[in-house]
Image 1 (tube, rainbow, N blue to C red):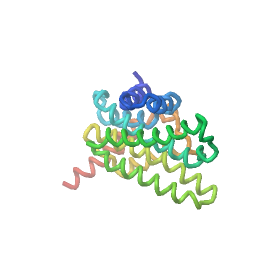
Image 2: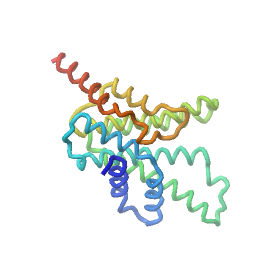
Image 3: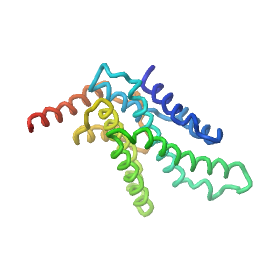
Image 4: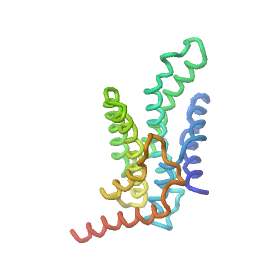
Length: 221
């Protein structure tokens, strides 16, 4: 099972008990078309530091990161398109918009739940808070600045992914590794880079940057 499939399966499992069924479908339908790169990067980060890690034990970390991203991505989309502004209150479109709002909230909440007892919990909270600040600043920003603020989400989520992945194997993500993760998400728009866009050297680079931190920590003791 590849990392994208593993992430999607874990994310679907995490929302499998959501009711009503229409809300659950609103969540899982988005997974079908979504890039699973945040979750895949989480798994890759864990495997980079421990090639023998049982990925079944890291799946919840990956799903947590993916769910937080999907919820924030949907929130960003809704805040900018405002589908309820033109919706017919008596038509199904308004119901769909309401379901999307609920889906965004549930997705982030489930992501938090999956990461709550991990060393990535604080970074997850930081990611959501940063998103809120960026979207608030975006309201009065010039178009170029607004686009840059939007792109911060993908960079922040990639940072969360390496934090969650390294935490899953008892390690930490130093500042240089966070910077590298943010660079992986860099692009000209706010779309999530596909899993296939990650360089073949990503795992080696993650391991090297994490090792530099561990060597420095050992030297200080």
